[in-house]
Length: 330
Length: 118
Image 1 (cartoon, rainbow over the protein chains, first blue to last red):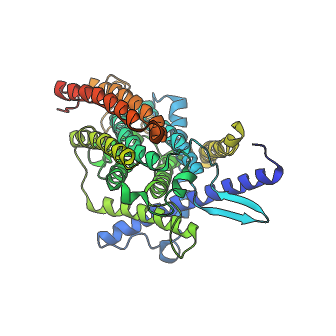
Image 2 (cartoon, one colour):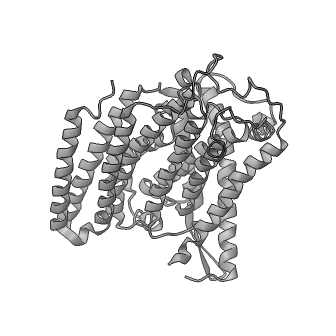
Image 3 (cartoon, one colour):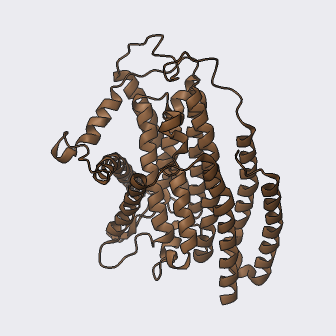
């Protein structure tokens, strides 16, 4: 594939758009989370900065940027500085393979609404989500704080355990679409969404991404009741901000992937594809906030038992059952 | 083929600039009033004892090893999942045999208590 200047400009345009949209969305997701939690708990939530508190994310950004920048005694200098970026960058990168709308045709130029339509898109997602684990592991270890160490090794074990069930729950999707290319997976769902064929895989994927986002009921790595803030106890200012923004970008990205793999991506009647895709992503984000406002935190042994003794074998059985069904159906 | 990765590389460059840029920018404009007490690791107000980069429970190491075993199996499943229609009944019998062996191993680690947390 060769590129002429128009292609490069288009790619840069799409990257700029994606970057702007997911960062803004992540900032407003923080605001939405505070608002929705407040409503669930019969409070008002942030409402002082701007109309309805809508400028709150901006105020938070200014606050985080101007905070003092320091590193605790004995912390590993480079790892401590770089870990937040290591957590945030893979989350942004994953979005590059998600198709967020039907291909546009402008001046006889077909523009796929996707930054990179790779033939191994699904594998790239799995690889990047594995890399994201390093941010948690190294950040916690480098802080030279006991809470941070405990939080990060807990987080590490949790993330890799649920990565397994997440990976296994996507095998049936590949079997149905017979491609790793995300645009093929979306195209295969033009008739019927995969959630209809694979409700169990969807459920396993949903639970696994909640654990991958370190969200309640799986927020053991940062359980504030016992570990203060877990792996980011020692982080403040913009470094904390990057961890935080990375987590919310992760929610958006994993919500987008859940929509792509199981809910037909941008397919939907009447409304334009981009609207359908955004609606599905926001629905997932709302679901995560709702769950946070409703459920208590699991105990660590319950968390690991559930991952290893329930989700993983269920996902394996599901793969074999799907395989037999599809082969015998012919 | 490598050209398909150009957008990914561009995005990586921009994401790295964003990540490092925001860190550097905030360290430039933030105030600096350091003191010995402020720089201590947080331990609920107590004096920290020793280093935190210490040994921790072997359980986590075990989980990491099990993860590698099962993740490799997961890697084997992916190529099969793309091609399983072409491989047909033979392919799925092979995959069934592979999973059976894996399942025996799974039962073994379960019975050995590798998945228990006391």
